[in-house]
Length: 81
Image (tube, rainbow, N blue to C red; front, side):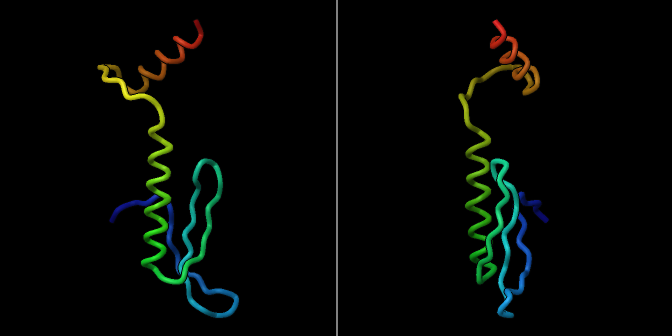
């Protein structure tokens, strides 16, 4: 089973109607939205995951033999100069 960053849970509104709640964290902000159907919840979760992945990959792509940690160290060292 795939692990998702955003969770879908069944939810009962105060009126007694059934819904689905999509919840998680995006850019340090808590996300929680109720939708009527599970298929709508899945679509919303996919949109949030795409938004998260796009924000995560911000920056310039450079081909290198350095690992990610080594690259971060090199960038930090370059900023100190």
